[in-house]
Amino acid sequence: MTSHFDVIIIGAGAAGMMAAPYAARRGRSVLVLDHADKPGEKIRISGGGRCNFTHLFSTPENFVSQNPHFCKSALSRYTPYDFLDLVERYGIAWEEKAKGQLFCQGKSTQIIDMLVKELTDAGAELRLGTEVLGVSRLGEGFTVTTPTQTLSCDSLVVACGGPSIPKMGATRFGYKLAEQFGLPLVEPVPALVPLTFNDEMKQGLSQLSGVAVEAVVSNDRASFDDPLLLTHRGLSGPAVLQISTYWEPGEDIVVNMAPGTDVLAQLKRDRTARPRLSPESWLAERLPKRLAAHVATTIRQVRLADMPDSQLVNLALQVGQWRIRPNGTEGYRKAEVTRGGVDTAALSSKTMEARDVPGLYFIGEVVDVTGHLGGHNFQWAWASGVACGQVC
Image 1 (cartoon, rainbow, N blue to C red):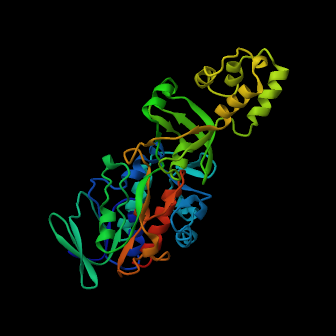
Image 2: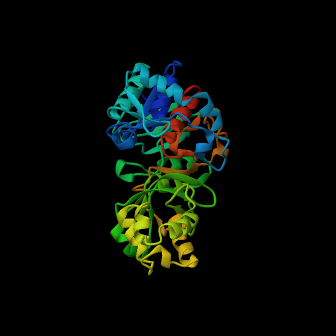
Image 3: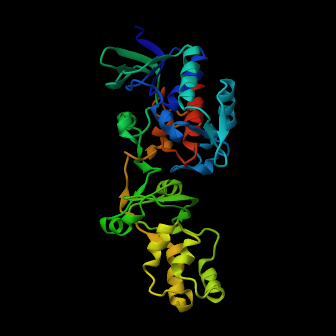
């Protein structure tokens, strides 16, 4: 087996498989290694098995990083429409679900098969079930040790993601390599992840597990207008997953379960126009039945007419400004991505190469660039992979 390659890519996920054909088409000998038995496992499970492969309106504003400008170069040079062109060349049927979010009409494995064919047709080699035991510097290149062989390369690309969803084999290996070569890290934390309640809150809201409601969920730094889901452990749903990327332990989030409505003004109008209406019936016109009944248990009055202004204010706050302090998150086991990672200050935004370690590249989720829900993280994988593959 060949032991020297121009480029070795560690990680057969979205970013790694995207970079490989671009490097190979430049005449570079390319090897992609992954410890998993199948490539692209995160691609396979994404979008409910249909892969939300990009977002048509992906912009730098859809990403979180200590340096919000870092992602601009790669994203501007490889756009969602570029990836969509690739999908269409392979005849993969797609559809737009929520505004801008593109999914396969069939299975997500179509995207994986496309990426594998792209890299193999370009002449790159894919080796699965191959654990990387260690990496070291060798002159101006690198050695990569596996259980059966020591490989060498001129350029090493780290595309092995972050620790989110460990049951799929996710590890912190990319961070260890960064630290080994002196690159700083932005502390990694779970992102796009459900938030959890303390025991007292869980007990009080346990009967609402499974209830979903349209909501605006916000904190001091961000706000998202998407569905919210109450679970037996806390809060989930798109709005909560989105705000989790901006949430810090000890902070409150605010939930508005009547977006676009001045709840207090509407209550006052209905107290006059519909005085016999019960608070629970009023709530049931706006909230799911179980949720309406739960909120109504805090109200002693049986008619809107009997509620003083102070009670209307209290009810309006419960519906329009429900303030919650989560006690944590579901952690990496439920996190779709990892926020944080290799500090972008140590990388070139044009090439993804480490500034102080020539030939070493970091792409995809392992880097401190985290996208919003809805295909943005895949777009970062494609764009950063291409930026690297064109030069490594």
